[in-house]
Amino acid sequence: MQLRAEDIKDHHSGLHIEQSVDQYPILAQLVKDGGYVFRTPVQVDVHVSVVGGVIELDGHIQVEVEIPCGRCLTPSVYSLSGDFHQSFVEELPNITGEDGEELELTAEEMGLELFDGEAIDLDDEVQQQVVLLLPAHPLCDEACKGLCVECGANLNEEPCECAEKKVSMHFAALKDFKVEK
Ligand SMILES: [Zn+2]
Ligand SMILES: [Zn+2]
Image 1 (cartoon, rainbow, N blue to C red):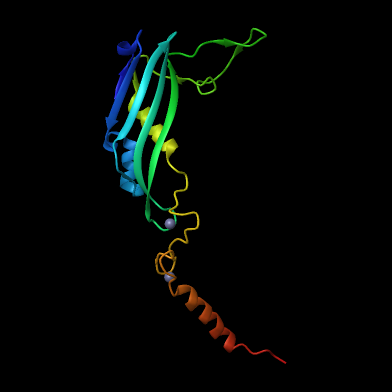
Image 2: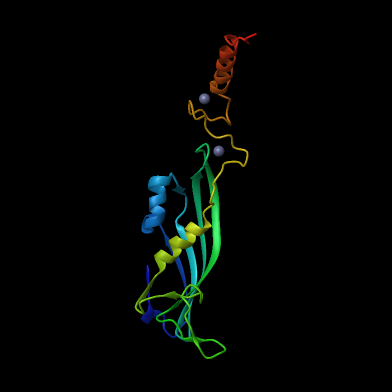
């Protein structure tokens, strides 16, 4: 959804947004390519305020997602929730240093985000925040043994025979090995 600047000028408002993951392109991509399964819509509570030309968003995000383990692909459920804060300005303020020189700071360095003065793309903000909440290395368990690279068996469930076979082949090679005198 788009937050139109003219609708939020001079007043404070709270919004509750509940949208399915299809509305967020980056998250929809995770579903399509990454095997992610979102079990709830993305729930967003956001408080919007305008302070001296700066639009401030204070939000809270909550969503439940199943993510396949990075080693064995077994899905685990993650309840993600987190707060975010973002300030938007139409143009960057001029900031001068102690010596009166103008400082060249980027929007990021000032903790600000630029917008076109018309509208803020709230959906984009929300999907970026959800991505930040995702676990970087999802694992079903820290000790997950993963899948066998030879036969694809889930090594957490039972050891496959590939490792054993390798060992016996190693011994078979040794049998023919003769030490020269
Ligand atoms: Zn695993
Ligand atoms: Zn195997």
